[in-house]
Amino acid sequence: MSSSDNVMFLYCDEERNLQTCPRQAHVGLWYEKFSNRWTKKNGKWKLKKQAWIQTVTRNKVGDREQINEAIKRLQCLVEQLNGRVLYMKTTERFVTGLGRSHPVENGFVWHATLGTAFLPGSSVKGVVRAWAEQWAETVDSDSINRIFGCEEKGNHHVGNMIFFDAIPVTPVQLEMEIMTPHYAGYYENPLKPVQDRNKPNPIPYLTVASNQTFLFSFAPRGQAQADDVQLVEKWLIEALEWVGAGAKTAVGYGRFTKDEQKQQIYLTWREEKRREEEKRAALASMSPIKREMMEDGYDHQQLERFMAAMTDKWLPRLEDSNESPFVKVEIAEHLRDWYLMYRPNSWSKPNKKNKPKVELIKQILSLT
Image (cartoon, rainbow, N blue to C red; front, side):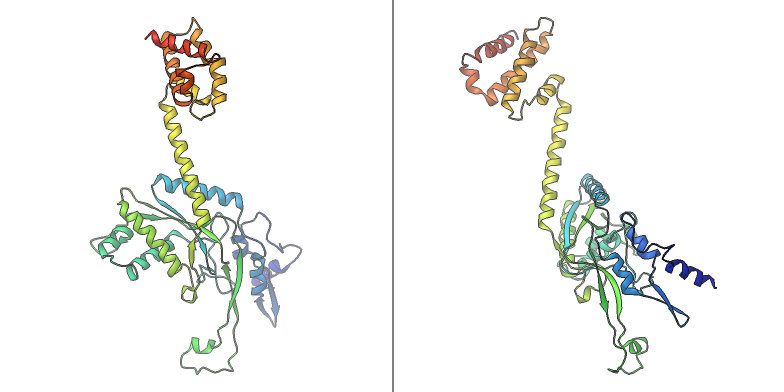
């Protein structure tokens, strides 16, 4: 038996070979390396291509937790670089990597770590640049070279934008598609006449289904102009909507449209993150007394909670003879400000319950 026969025997031996992709396996490695739908007929090995493709189309591919972690890391990176994040979903099927070598004759691009479909950053950059050069209005060559880089002799430099890989936001549904050339002989040799009696040649290949959302992102390299960032964002959306990305865009593949729902979720997350960062910065600049009061609900409109903290903690510290006078004054100032903000009537005209508290605060303040 030849070495090739030994290899094929390994792939076809049901006792020693996996018949289905393991649950937590890297689907890309499975699809590229473990093709096990080979049969031998008349001394020739033949792959059952459709059967093999269908091993990766039954379930969505990609681990949800790993994808979520990658999305969060990418979002944080782009935010730190003052870039843009766009959630775009496929309106038609999407395919990339058809020219890659594979036993089914058409390859597929798999993310090296996530094991799912993606679009390399270089491809994203190419799509946007092609749109800017061929279809965008009122764009000069200087702007193109500034944003995307230039390879002209004597003027070689990188662009001022970094384009990141477009990755899915959830596990991806893959589908099988079939193209059927009817005139293979003519395509191989144009001198051969086209005849209707020619035998069709069905060729299956793997695609990403429609309605799958991907995260597209880019960021300025250093101190790029703000106008350039807005311009690239506009070009990216237009290019994906009108031209598409990946292979077979001429027949409608690779079109994307903005996923408004996920985009809004991202914007909400970004705003909450910004507020949290501002809050942490503000807390870091506060005195220990004010920071502790904030933890007790000082300015969160948790009135009852802070009133309880005032009674149990802060007013007793004003009466403590061992407490520093400077600390007492700071506490009293913060308590006065709280009353004026949330309980102004209780400060100006305190009732029987609040009067001792207010008088104690005013007494401390009168010492300054």
